[in-house]
Length: 88
Image 1 (spheres, rainbow, N blue to C red):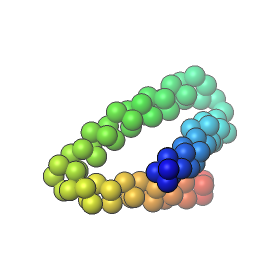
Image 2 (cartoon, rainbow, N blue to C red):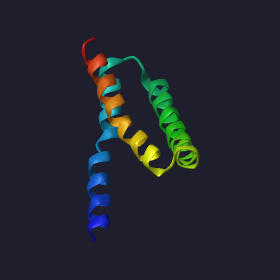
Image 3 (tube, rainbow, N blue to C red):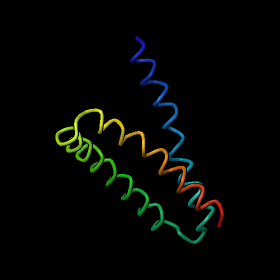
Image 4 (cartoon, helix red, strand yellow):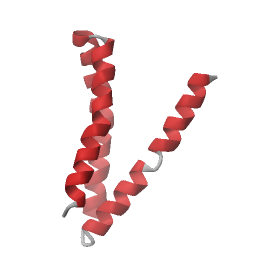
């Protein structure tokens, strides 16, 4: 039951990321149009394809702790990207 509640909480938290990314990019690049949204969709699909593969390699070669630790780095990288782009 606790794991299910955790999954639901993560789902609610992650559900705001895609619409927020689209809105932020549309505000930053108002002339982007369909090409911008296609590029964002391609990047998202590529990440969804590559992330499990990379996580599997990390588990195989570094162990589960290394893979889980690398997963904790992604939000930090995202925070740095947001901080850098917010300055512009």
